[in-house]
Picture 1: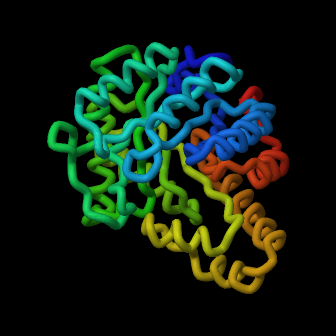
Picture 2 (picture 1 turned 180 degrees about the horizontal axis):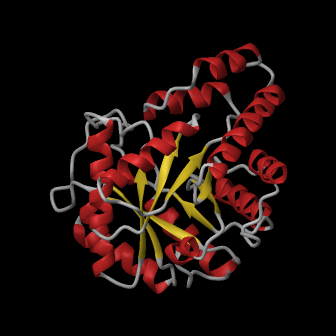
Length: 298
């Protein structure tokens, strides 16, 4: 699956399941070397696609673009490019989209993005930019033959007034041209199933790929949960708290819980799984092995 010519929407429509990995842009050259080590380790699992996020508030954009271009040019993996509205004018967004097109990257995840202060901060649009992700979706679709994905929130976006309104906004992104969605991480499968139902009630049938974040560090997952508004279920929080100082035990619980969640999601009709790797490969490889996953086999 070399280079970037395939479309995620086509791969989803072909049947089977998609299995994908997400990475974040390293802040240093040393971090970038470590990321490439992880990428090479996970390449052997034949993921359907991989993606590289923007940094908080749209920072690290240049490194994100460079890493995404290298994935397209130097690996067998299909890259999905992240693009956010944060801190960018429409002119700058057009330039980045052009860079991706020149590199042969044809799949884009179009996001409004979080404020520089984090998901709970006050969001302000660039004076010459966009306010909403659907505007960015339309721009990407206008500028070339791109397949565009968007974000979805099983437990609601932190700024949403209610879950139904959140689903209506997701349907609006589909109306703007989005062809698939990837969710924020969550811990209970019912949240994902109900999101799919709510989106369908507003006329959106685009595939919604569940996002999975295996717990490997207790303080880290607490921070992510607080920022994203995705609470850790009390039974899981209690289990993790009891072994908080034992890194191996924490990872074992995290992998076990993620495996159970993945099985329930796939059995319930999820079109695939998207793993938030945090730039590490061990937990993701353990889950893959236990589930017997193979993107090549579908």
